[in-house]
Image 1: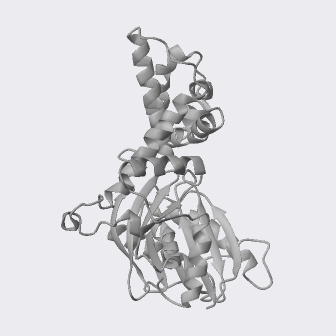
Image 2 (image 1 turned 135 degrees about the horizontal axis):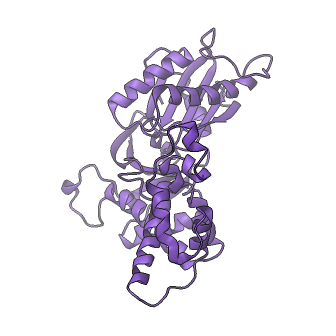
Image 3 (image 1 turned 45 degrees about the vertical axis):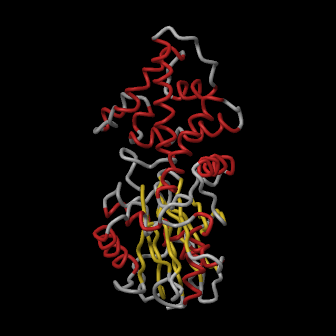
Length: 365
């Protein structure tokens, strides 16, 4: 048992990284989406299987051309740490743990750590001995915010959380929100037009969205509503008779608009797109601020809140990986009086987790 596995399971991809006892990364690979809340246990397990079995190809001797079969014939993992989007309750942790134990051949217990994916982001707290609190904010396909405390034992304990409620109820600041807000603001502008108000300036984003869905003319923007609401076809016959974008799950039709919005906002400097991102950044900032104590606020009112000026804000996820977007979030937080002492962006959470797990040698991180 000499390998240490960390897997970051998100709404867009699964990232698996394997390190040896010295912390050297031996293998890594990607798999498909693995948000536990949106998938069956079988689909979730398959996504993890693809990532881990491919990561193992460079970890065995001799290296394998083909993915390594799981579960392995012998116990090759000293321990494994999974950060899984959509795992937000003890019941979800138990269900995911059972599936992963069977897949990897690791018995349930301290060698198999399963938690929400925000837990992987809090690792930079250990780099700052002068503070004891961190707020981890994920902004990718979805979003979630969790605060942590550094215990004297060296462990990180969760203080509070908000978000992670999925694309219908939340995901503020994530890809779903960006796509949804784009559609909402397009519909608001269509309503303005129906009132005979002064026309708004042309928007490169509106043009790109309408083009994607085969709609001609901004005056026909309300035709996007079926794109949002129609379910994907349930039969192959039905699939053959609809546009390709309707074959995509409804929530993905929204989140897949995010690249168009970011390009229009930060490359084309489209005011409409920039306003969409300001709204979304403000939504994620509201989530972060919820876990913080207002300057001068009585600590007894929010006993488990953190003070931003004595904490590190750890970002993770594809959208908050864009510096201009993070700047909008910082701007919104500053307006609320929350300026963090340190800010970190965790670009490769699975690698950070695998190396950290190896540094402990065995068991829980």
